[in-house]
Structure formats: C-alpha cells, structure tokens
Length: 272
Ligand SMILES: Nc1ncnc2c1ncn2[C@@H]1O[C@H](COP(=O)(O)OP(=O)(O)O)[C@@H](O)[C@H]1O
Ligand SMILES: [Mg+2]
Image (cartoon, rainbow, N blue to C red):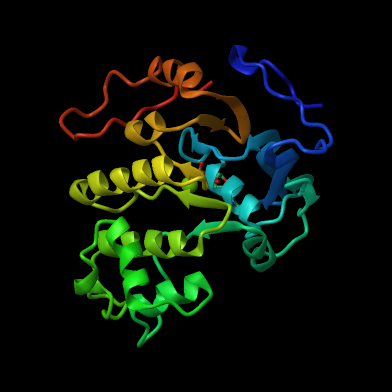
C-alpha cells in the first residue's frame, strides 16, 4: 500500500475507480527497473497517484529523479516493470502508444518530426485528423505566437529555429485536442525570449481550455500556474499537492548559490 502523508501531505490512497468519479489518470504502484551491470536498478519505485480531470499538473524534482521515465510510462513509450495505469477507469497498462493516443493521451516530442516536403500546414492538418482550411490552421499558429502567414506554407526543416519548431510542435499538439497532453521540459533548449512567449502560451492554454496538461518543468513561472505539483526524486513520489502546499517546500530548498542574473530561477533539492 502506498504511503500517505509524505512531507505532511496526505496522499489519496488509490482504490478502484468509483462510478462517476471525476479522476482520469491513476497510477497504481508503478515501478520501473532496469538492468545495470547485471544488477537491477530501480528507476521508479512504487509510485501511486491520481490526477483529476481539468488540471494543470507540473511534475518537478531533481535531474535523474525519474520524471521523464514517468511521462513515458504514462504515454506508453515505456512499460512499467510492475503496477497498473488506469485511464478513466480503464486499465491501459498494456496499451500501445498509438492506442493511448487514440484514447486521448498525447505526448509532445521536444521537436516535431521532420519529413522532407511536409509543411507546417500539413503537420497541423495531420494532427487534427481531418481536412481543415488554412484559416483554421492559422488559428493554431497564432495561438502559439507565430505569425501564421509567414509559417503556414513553410517546410518543417532545419531552416526553422529551435524556438519556432517548439512552438509548431505545441500548435500541432493543440490541434490534436486530446484529453491530456504531456510536455517534457518544453523550455529546454530555447532562448529566453522564446521562453517568455512559451509561458504565455501555457498560461493561455490553462485559462482558455479545459484540457489536462501535464508538464515536466523546473521553471518557477510554470510551477506558479500549476493546479497540482508532483515532486519526484530518486524514483519516488516525494510530495503532491497544490502549489500553495508544495512551492514553499521547493523554494525552502532553493540553493543560495543559484547563478544570478540568468533571469530564471532554477532550484536544487538537497540530496537526502
Ligand atoms: N532505459 C533505461 N536504462 C537505464 N537507465 C535508465 C533508463 N531510463 C532511465 N534511466 C535512468 O533513470 C534515471 C532517471 O531518468 P529520467 O527519468 O530521465 O530522470 P529525469 O527526467 O527526472 O531527469 C536516470 O539516472 C537515467 O539515467
Ligand atoms: Mg527528464
């Protein structure tokens, strides 16, 4: 049985999904082991959590803690060694990535897949899964702060910058319009200017849509718009709660030696 009350926060002990309950994603005792030098290494250790519908969830914690592995397990890219995943009450533990995507779980790759000859319009149209007109596709681009007429006919290739590619990826994810979208450190590898825009995109997504967003991030501004923060460290669920509950714990451990003037605040959790 999962422990309750880690860091003083009472965690819901998962049970069978109840008729009519609003939660949508439940991880039950998820573990993920790998073989390392003929020894078993626990990457995720008995993680149980429940995410309710209509939430903006930020997963945070130190590097190497297991966040990306958790995201991949939710998306179906990795399979857990043990434990179960329920989606709207259905056991999807053994379901493929494609079937999970069909069920409404979408994973945002760091950069859109590039195929020769594929334009931004093609990508957005593919994502919606139906024929759309250029005006509709342009709406998605505008939402991510790209001037649609400059981009809609461009080929998705190396001529686009990292920040542009990332925004195009986010536009395609929005066009997919799935029940839940997972972003793994969307801020990685983009410049500060693009980052400010990206934050606005997430803020807007959060305000205007009823989509569930799960973002792995260390960024204070992203943590600040979270409805729920999940802290993962050393393969374990260390805490889960509202930002009011979790942020003081995180910033209580902000390294006093954080580099100054970088414009964004990274934190380091003390090793236990
Ligand atoms: N398939 C794998 N084989 C071996 N080690 C892995 C594998 N996947 C993840 N790891 C290790 O598990 C730890 C957690 O990785 P990751 O989930 O990427 O952490 P985070 O995203 O929190 O930085 C890291 O030490 C990583 O090297
Ligand atoms: Mg990661």
